[in-house]
Picture 1: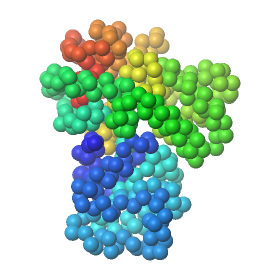
Picture 2: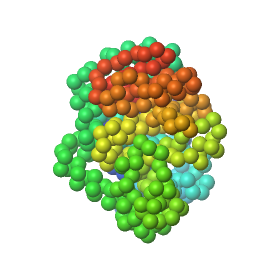
Picture 3: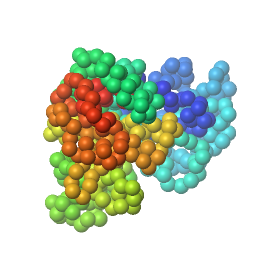
Length: 413
């Protein structure tokens, strides 16, 4: 299954000869992606999984074991290290290998939560790598129709947004795209349950996956002892998706203190179970103090159809923002916007600390929301209302658009 990263991850204009660190949730397809790339280069033998005792033994016997392998290649080889962060001295190992072979090979390092977490501690690798993230499948990826993804220049220009983008949204085919959208809604964006498309398999996979994160990754990355308490928190979060998260309310329900709940939420973010979106404010400090929203990477954990759609859109927009940042197109962030009177829009894409686009997820509302109209006028950016139970595309005054969710999501990657 082709991923959007294949278009830019190995572009020398993007990675500039750096090591590529590819992290993301467990079982999202990082290893498969790396192996497919190696296969296309005829270099499958340059994949090294550090869970394999043979790989660790080969390095221990000869720390310069790559020299002969690189010398045997006719073209610049790609060397992939998977799970190397489990080795106690992994940073020093990578630093040494990269410094010796940086002009002879390209390095890619893959891993899940622990790689992302350990990467942030210490500075021995600073300046030697660029970090990328792989997130759940986008709609174009799920269909195997990468050509659908709109050129980033179209989405980054307001003028083109209202001409080229609207034209391309109108031309999206109905049957295949709508069917893939509905399959993603039901089975989520993790490749295995999506491809199986079987309810019984999906239920078992989700239960085992959640257990793996809580009883392995959480124990490895935190000092949390009360795993049962964290499990109870995870059960409470789906009904709170789409609303500012009240730590005080959770504290009362779980009968623990405020700091404990906050620590648990941060731990769930580290293991890629959830992510948070902060409210936007021109004063950054004020935004940080206000309540964030929390979403799941696996939106199938949310049973309510409206909240599930919003969660799926949140992951899609997070993936889009990550891609733009990784391409070096600007400093992008995903926020939501809310005022003291309670007017709120689900998502605000921010570019270089300035509002860029407003987006709202709705089950069936076909008129621009009052909050959407309110904030569009004040922020002077386009407003997109993505509707789940709708197949059309409508243009309203003042840069407001009502769009079938499946149309929009098929073009953003």
